Image (tube, rainbow, N blue to C red):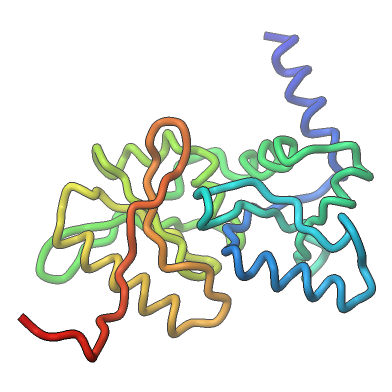
Length: 207
């Protein structure tokens, strides 16, 4: 047991002191952040975010370092200078919450979903504890349409699937700091895409 905790302390010590927030990031946003860094004169890995795949080809899990009232993205160059890895970032971020932050919400007319309720910026920590998702039911679905919002529900209810997916799409389209309307699920080894509510083509024929 002593050896185990010693190993954990080494992982956490590989990074500077302070909080590192997990940030679901779309492909487009990762590209946009790199362009902003290059516009500031950064090159190479100093202009590339330190990220892992969250949902293959759809979403990345990047990280932000809390610096006072700012939380800039961690770059690959910074991570290399610290002698750390994205696994170290993930471990530090996962330690920000120690209890399940999912809270039940009822839907008018029937059905339910769960919302992450926690200190601002830590909502995506739940994604680093997939065992917490089982509280919603046998097929937990997840969406993180905008920063500060993570919703989880049981995918066995088709009507709830529709309601929450459409709501996520509306948040994505109507709120600042949009991430993605994608709905994804935990398959036991990682997150995989499930779908999303897409706007109907107004030119499509009606049935």
